[in-house]
Image (cartoon, rainbow, N blue to C red; front, side):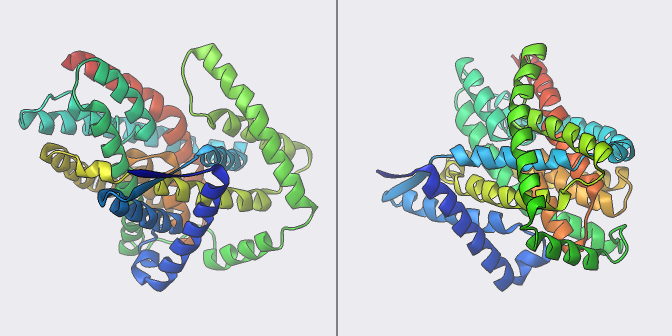
Length: 397
């Protein structure tokens, strides 16, 4: 079969085109906008479906260099770090703790559900972990890592099942997040805490469009500096702790420190301009991530895997709607965090951010949610998930 390989420049051009396609479809098809489905998700999945069709017909399949995908991901999370200020940290500390407890609970639930259902269908119950938090909370990276380990342990099909389940989780988490938050907002008549949120969002967007002045240059230089310093910070964290952190953690920490130093000295941080870069980076990264999904792996899932994944979706909705939303306060911020929780608990933190961005674009900003979700989804939960997976794998073995 012919492989069509795109270099990193072709890949970013493809991502931009898919974003435009997704944006067009979101405007033309009301249901996408109504349920807050992110435009890059729509465009990226369209490409994945096309790639799957030509692959299944034996014609060809398309791959691309994902170098810039990683770069855009790191840039975006650096901008998230710039949104963290000490007053917000004090305000959001309780939310981070509660969200972490919920994330740990979901990790255990996913694994018990996966092991129980897979084992009940006369399949190696250890494979249930691959359809549990390895793929759901962990995402593709964790699935690839543990899949290789479990293959070496003689657990047949662990890598394929894990990656296929993670692919499913990425798509399902992106599709479920916005509609679930919308249901919470509409059912309980919730409103953004800021007065006249819609008008304020419009004003900020106008300001962003006009940000071609020196403030924009300043914000970009802040961003590049934090990105470079953060890479060193991340390396030092790994050396000190022996743990492997996501590549963007150091940049988020460096950006948060820089933000508070600038606030203390100048009281004038160009946050609106930083948000422009963050928004662009997130859209390009997510479009590339969705376009790179090999959906044909889902076809190879056996019936037990499909049944378990369907059960994971149902449990996720029930847990998010009836527990996460209420525990986090049953207000507007908790509705936005519910969308984010579904994103990272079924796929990746980037999906969580895209879910929340789609919701806040329609209903208004939620700074607490944009601080809480990446802190839990990208910093704490991966480490705790690894501990839980390792413990259950050893127990089952």
